[in-house]
Length: 222
Ligand SMILES: Cc1cc2nc3c(=O)[nH]c(=O)nc-3n(C[C@H](O)[C@H](O)[C@H](O)COP(=O)(O)O)c2cc1C
Image (cartoon, rainbow, N blue to C red; front, top):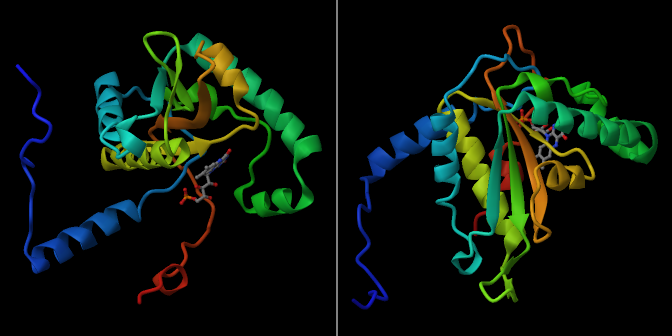
């Protein structure tokens, strides 16, 4: 049977103005509680939860529907250890030689350094890869479009879905991240995009005392 080119929009939900105001306020309150944490507990989390949040990320819009992302869940202690060793090597270089003074100054408020113990402690590392192009069936390169924008949107939805189930995250970007492609055996058409640490916060976790911008600083209405 021939595939229909268009199908009816199913399960679309519309709310009254009052209801959507209420829902939007509640959702803002929930999302406003999201913070990046840098101290994790090793308490396990079901992998089914992590697979579900990745299914959610996979609902993101993407340029020409190319869905140019790949997610790797790392739960193996051995692989986490390899990632920690490689990340700390890059971070040592960054903090001691590569980082410009201004960048280091901007990072002071976070008290971060080259040591990344959480990479071995948290139950999951989720590595997001950006699929720069695809290799088609015949072995020819095929284009993807707006890959950064698409993978950024999917990653935001991933963080939102994790926060929604009470899983704390750290968006981590040891630079450069090419060691992740090697350790995780990913093909050359994929570039590491983000390393997301996921788990419950360690008891007594503290976070930097930083502020979010006010609406009038980030919004213009014509
Ligand atoms: C693209 C990106 C890269 C980041 N890289 C790091 C990182 O390598 N190490 C780190 O400790 N935090 C990193 N962060 C976390 C930010 O410092 C954090 O999101 C920001 O300070 C705001 O704090 P909040 O997430 O608690 O709201 C990164 C965040 C983003 C979005």
